Image (tube, rainbow, N blue to C red; front, side, top):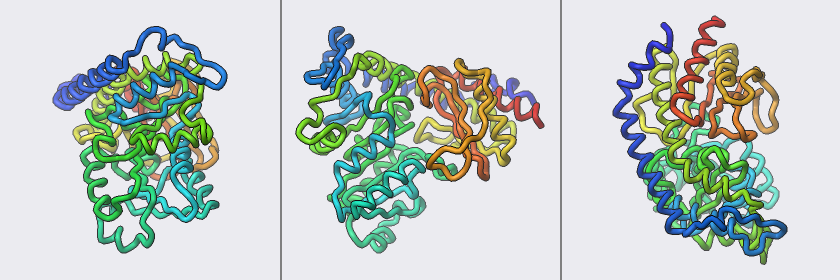
Length: 403
């Protein structure tokens, strides 16, 4: 069967799901536009080029206001100097935790690069405990297994590289937070929101979280942000984190935007649209993949908690061929073939596919996978649904051609 023959059928069968995605996209686009209007962004702010220490940087202040309003936060730190989601989480943890404090992961093991951060916290005698994902709502188990109440509770919204773990919807995050607050009502709730922004018409802060963090080169930067990250949430908590991001006594009053706020702001304005296009493409592609005999997580008709599609490929050769097919459909570096490589912090060689205009961006259209069973491809991003479906169909055909 030719996967292209399924495209029209997929678009028809998935039409109700696509209609729902478009409605969410419309709400989020209007929400972000309202944030710009309420924040009073003018052309001088957009073109302002702060340098040096960044005292009185209009761009930095504008980013904080607009992101706060867009993400339902009281306050936000948005800086090009925050280089990744891991950097944002690390800054929050070092700001909020002190010796003898405890951090608890409520959603099982943290992803690989965050393990190094947890290890460094142990040097400060900061304890760490994780609750198995399948026991995340079991209050009796949690209450009996946690001896010291955690200062901070960590929730990972996306599955990360834990391929069999479901990503969490906002309703599930809300239930999780209400449940855990019955036991630990004074704990700070931090949600790693990477890949989850604008997937639904609410954010984790609407569901009771105290802090959310993310990377601007995932989805919320709208494929225009050249770098950066955000930390958003309750004002008193964000103020404390500001002193760790920069320095005590200076906090959030320094840090130049270097004129990058233009791309970051414009990217945020476009982000709901691009994320909606990505979700539409992933939904259609899921249908095609499933009817070609592949297993996908989530399946095409399931609710999504993030903008990531997992495809179980079952062997190393298929994974490599699939990701090389993705690479060959990217607008930049399409002529190169990605090969497995050792990357610090990961348990096995990793193969990365993606050709965009920002190094490491996973919002533009990319895929990756770890070379270990069951050989799962993680697909994310995409400027348009057509680009996503084109790339995945090309990957399927490459697998078929290579046998």
